Length: 595
Image 1 (cartoon, rainbow, N blue to C red):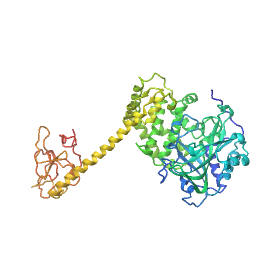
Image 2: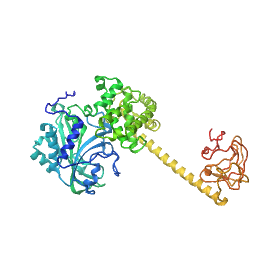
Image 3: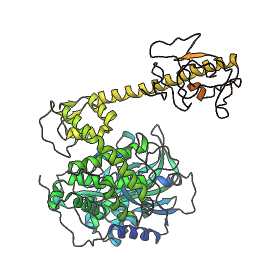
Image 4: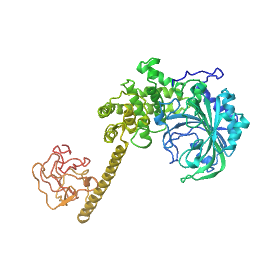
């Protein structure tokens, strides 16, 4: 089926995204709402979420009744990130016209004040009267058993029944038209408002306004959540003390409707980023359209990276930092697909800052940190990207002769396609820093899958080795500590006088240790000459006996009596701060522990 031509509706007046945001705030302030600043992407004190994924996160306790605020109506615009847990749009970014990792949510909230009737009326009035969206282009969904919401839409708003869809069965696992922030917490039935992009986009009788978004005709723009229940770990529900309202409307989607463009990525929130990339690449409009998937990934991920770093997240190998690393590295790879060899993400991040700093001043305040972190991460990844890609492509040679198709979905592959061995995928992850999802995506472009089961097994084995190594290290440390304490118990304390004197006399050796074993005597053999040195134990507190009068001079190579350290080896003296060799061969000949 060919893609229909997008038709503009002359009844809708185009507005910049910043103006839509301003009007939204003004509309609800006039109706008694307090403007509340948006929260960080890192939820404060909430262990149930990796990132702020909706506008209601900062109001969670107010919605459950656990917190009382000075207002009972609020409005905000909230930066959100959906890359983990129940709400995860990472794999859809670039492939669809409406999904993002980072997006901006406009929301109005009621804490025990108004409920379904006013929430629906407010939304309808803002869309149709303030923004001028024609009523005949809007439809609604309600939860299957929510007769109250259905009645409001049909009888008070006047929507015909054919433009009201009823969905959802939460007790049996169907969560359409039911919203929850996480596995536990406030939740309730929804009523979603959808925009009709045109009958020409319909793909058949199944194309009705619903939550699945499988049909391009309908675009969900606003979700009105009626917070009625507290969700518990066993999925049981208890009524909240005072039902509330939590609404969320994606600014990117609403802007695409008001600006009448085919996708979110064609709005003024993304177009400047595309324009900068086109400048860097020298692409004309046709080249941009041919490479739209990669352009959209870069634009989305540039925004997400800038906002994450501005909120204090830095690239790392775990937790939030790992998500940021995945985002940056995926964008860098798509830049390479477009032919960009030099760093570019700092340039696209500058555009993000310039575009969004008016609403989010902290972006400009942290400009230096944002650009510096992106430059470092991009530079680090570029150094390994080619080597890792080469390894993967070598593994693909015996598996396929397919041409690369950028954007091919891993889930669209047949179950019997050849698979990249899990050990190769693990090596890419462990050696080259390729996130597994990047390997899966790259392999899918050639029509090849990845043996995830073997990858997961290799990853688990590595983690077990790491845990075992740490346990063994701790056990070894405990054994050595006990040995040193035993020697100290029978020999008494010693005192370090190296800062006070340059020579010692009448010193004595109180113990001879090698590889954690105490010896009565230890003879030198071959080039493993017995040398005296301050050991790791000395660095941790062993001190030469105060009766000592002379220490070996630097460079002196002879048996010495007089070091109070429990390890006695015959070697040139070196500072206690250099760690001793642990390979069983003793220190290096240069007297500094080198080879």
